[in-house]
Amino acid sequence: MHGAVFPAQEGRMSGVPQFAPITAEVEGHRLTLFINGADRLAALMALIDGARNSLRLFFYIFSEDMIATRVRDALMAAAQRGVKVTLLVDGFGTPDTGSSFFQPLIASGAVFERFVPRLGRRYLLRNHQKIVVADKARALIGGSNISADYYADDSTAKSWHDLFLLVEGPAALRLSRYFDSLARWMKGGTGGFRRLVRLFQRRSETRGTLRWLYNGPFRRMSPLTRAIRKDIDTAAQVDMIQAYFAPNWGMLRKLGRVTRRGGLLRLITASRTDNRTTIAAARHCYRRLLRSGASIAEYLPQRLHTKLIVADNAVYIGSANFDMRSLYINGEVMLRVEDAAFATAVRGLINAHAPWCDPITREEHRARSTPFARLRWLLAYFLVSTVDFSVTRRLNLRAD
Image 1 (cartoon, one colour):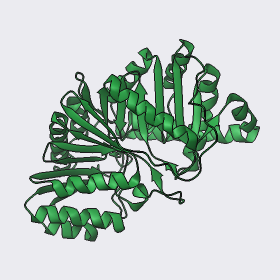
Image 2 (cartoon, helix red, strand yellow):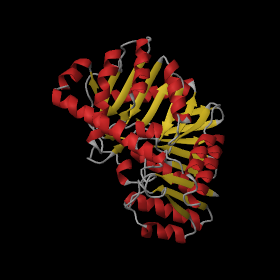
Image 3 (cartoon, helix red, strand yellow):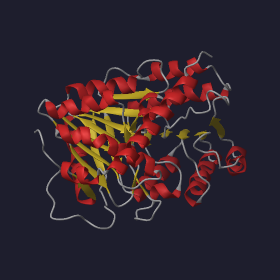
């Protein structure tokens, strides 16, 4: 399989792709993967509107726009019909949405908290998770925040391409238990930073077909990062769609070994995003991977926000990007699903992205790599993977 590429195409497609939801039955769970913005929004609203006993939500970004108002009002309606509603948001990701926006929800009886580690050395810590759990039986995870830009199926400058995974079954109950532990930590104020890290460790699962894996600023490697590294170490085929791609050199070497041992590595990254520095940082990583035989392409129609990994039969879906912050610092959640049929279906989705991508060959990348471009990519990678990572980690790992 060494050197294999994405399926050949007659020509690059124009417009914005539309993908049908993917469904699977895995060990007593029904999984539904929603890709289109309209489908993701419909799944979110259906989960809220269909809740009868409880709703648990955590979002990194909860804006103050038409979509956010619609979601807030649906949560208010749920609380008014007797559903216990708890909404948690990240203080770093949601700094501009004032308390007045959430006040009607609180007045309806819902619980509302912001994830804000105390100012100073913890300020750079972010909880990047996106979680919705209804009635402890149905859960929605992925990369989508609560903002209109995440649900627009068009090629406007700000629209995001992303996904949501609906999980119906016992795993939703386990995610609700994690959420409750996080909510208790947040309600207690600073709560003890080490307690938060232990929470991520304790709730991460080491066995099972469906495993919840969490990341945070561990002194050593988190359960999430350890699991990803282990799967890459043994995989014959690794396929990825990554909004932000800037791993350390150790992880890049692991990816390069996939092709060097005769396997297949395929990567789709962003050509459009909200921060050009992250694109430049990803391009700094291409040369090593292309030289090893990887296939790389950049997604064109929208800003890319998808976080998706398939390593042999293991599929990772959730909030974590493939960069230093997501793999070693941020609060993140990913669901690892080990199932051959589901992995095949998700690989089909990755294949279907190819017509909307610009393939990056070694020759094309070499032509792009002017001295100025290489310097810009290097500086961007240094900023994203070293400066931001090192400063934040040093501040967060000091003793409480």
